[in-house]
Length: 79
Image 1 (cartoon, rainbow, N blue to C red):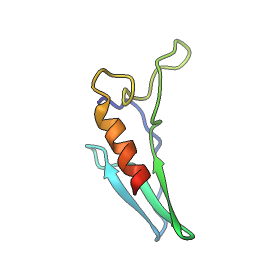
Image 2: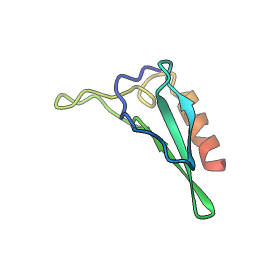
Image 3: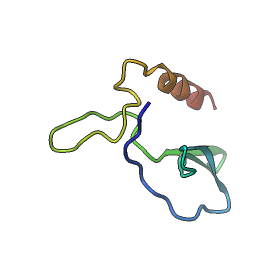
Image 4: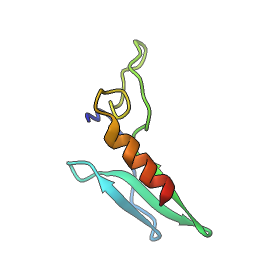
C-alpha cells in the first residue's frame, strides 16, 4: 500500500521505540509507555482521502487491498 508522505520525528525519548519502519528506515509506528498503558503514534494518517486542495498522504484504507491495514488496526487495539 503506497505511502507518499509521513511526518518526520526527531530523536526518540528513552522510553520510546519504533515498532514498524518504512522501507527507508524511518519510523512508521512508534510506541511509548504512559502510566500503565501505551501510546502508539502513526507517522502517516491511518485514514486519508485524495482531495483537490490536499493530495492523499497514503492509500492505507483507500485502496481495494486495504485488508492489511484493518488487520494491523485490529492487532493494535488488542495490544
